[in-house]
Length: 301
Ligand SMILES: Nc1ncnc2c1ncn2[C@@H]1O[C@H](COP(=O)(O)OP(=O)(O)OP(=O)(O)O)[C@@H](O)[C@H]1O
Image (tube, rainbow, N blue to C red):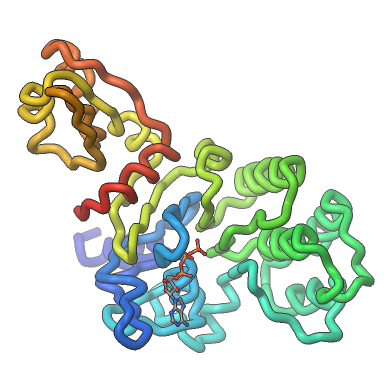
């Protein structure tokens, strides 16, 4: 097989392609020149502060909004108002709007019709797990129950691209753990592409295979979670040594006090050892800390 023949299979593995995407609302730029790919069978975390642009990006991937600049492709096509593509995408968003008269069972019945891979037995099981009153109107549900309806729909849809936009609002810690557990177990049996936006980074960091961090509309980190865990370090020591050691690296955050500095960097696997040889102190950085520090500094890559 020559290189050209190989290309379609490479493309087939690419579930989403976001290329130079910008989204403006009037003069305000919510998303700015963002590019990344979503591959088949992976769990992505879309992380960032309030207003960073996470929901806006997800809405464009779901085909609910159009970019102002650049292009979005899902399964090789523009998802905007494209029924063929959107049947393969489930977007569980907190502010989902349903008709007034809809009860939980109506939402689930509609989802069953919409999603070709819907698993009714699994949906029934999840309804029990989350203790959902299926005959109750959506408007009368507690916030946590509404979130659970989104979770049941998202998981049971088995959609090849499933997106959860802060799916835990109002859910207590037990229910959140149930969600994470079910997500991982079901993903292991039915691999698909999952994109999860969240503020509760420490809670989900073990689930994520790939991390996307967005800050004020711009993508600042696009890395495999495992690689990121190894590369994100804080080095501290005399300012001039720290400066020399980190100047060529991606610097995410820095603090200085009385001739000493602490700099958080994305380095290479052997950097911690080099830093120690130079007499610098090295600490690993949690994903949560990394996101907070990237946002505080606001550095762009
Ligand atoms: N329809 C709109 N009109 C004007 N501004 C908007 C609109 N939708 C979003 N924005 C603005 O775009 C920015 C990004 O919003 P978005 O909802 O994507 O952020 P987010 O990262 O999902 O935030 P959060 O974590 O708080 O949900 C915010 O400043 C928001 O106010």
